[in-house]
Length: 137
View 1: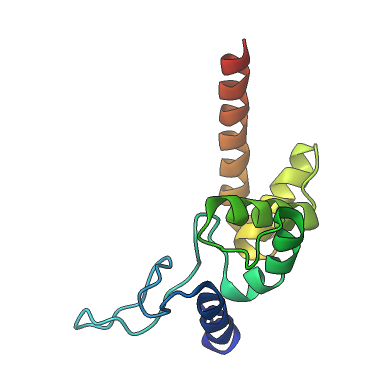
View 2 (view 1 turned 135 degrees about the horizontal axis):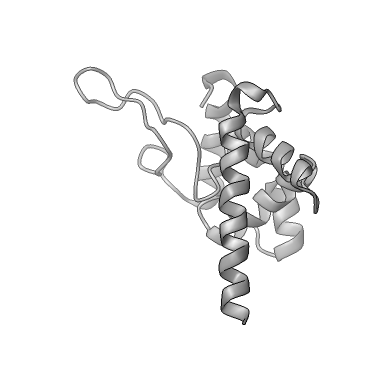
């Protein structure tokens, strides 16, 4: 989490959900050399939302699901928000749109320096699509 951007939203999100911000799990919590936690780390829940990004999607998720407040640690809310974010980032039925959306999800841009991420997302997507086809047959 970027301290000046994400800590206040994280506090607000956990408060709205009745969670303790000091023990609510996030990815990559920061620790000092002595092992003591010195920060919250990064992203929240199964879709790995940064708190400031979640703030832009929580009301949209609630409007769709009827659940308020939306919870980034609830897999249903998390991936509803992820679907909305990916769509807003250009995801469509094309591989190019899906690649660009995955890249924006990961790094905020389509910088080819990070193309490994978008490429891997498309590889995994193809595998999941094949698995689904195999189940239907």
